[in-house]
Length: 250
Image (cartoon, rainbow, N blue to C red; front, side, top):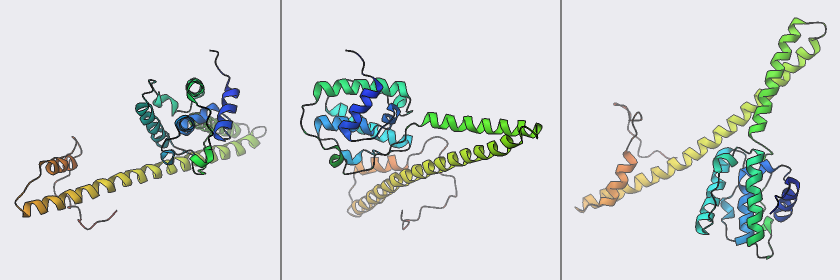
């Protein structure tokens, strides 16, 4: 079967899912791949798919949903997640071509409302990730270089020297803002899972105290506590550290 062109693939994808993708690289967020599968099966947990994902950890979460679908439907196809989330054109083009062939073979022709299935969630996915970072560093290096040469040639190079460094600073500031947003997302995710572990710890402790008062024991609860309190080499709690406040909330 002849490979479908990029433009034809994008046209098919945008029409099927009512998207406005302009580049194959945008598929690296994983959202579109998930919804193509949903158009076939109609039972994907679309509430867990972030169609406007901006960061790599969000892309990975989308692909985890997809991997679960592959496992449940017994689809024998490896998903090169580490490559796809880098949002490079060639990797996503090859996978999108496979997705299109799979859809052609399995879509039953039933009606599909993509906007309703994703509950009107926004889909403004970034065009690329890695290439954007490269272009920023490229413009930054260009700006610094122009500024230095401008300093040596004040007559002919003064104009370029005064504008290029400003562009470099703006590019670096934009990159810093993006990194700050990414870090904020990671911190929220960390706090989310930590609060879950804290709730489990309190629940297990309360149950153990209740059982001990009755002269009973529970091996499963003890194993859970062992897991909660275990540490890795280099991450031991230092001696003399203040105990955790039992009333602390998260």
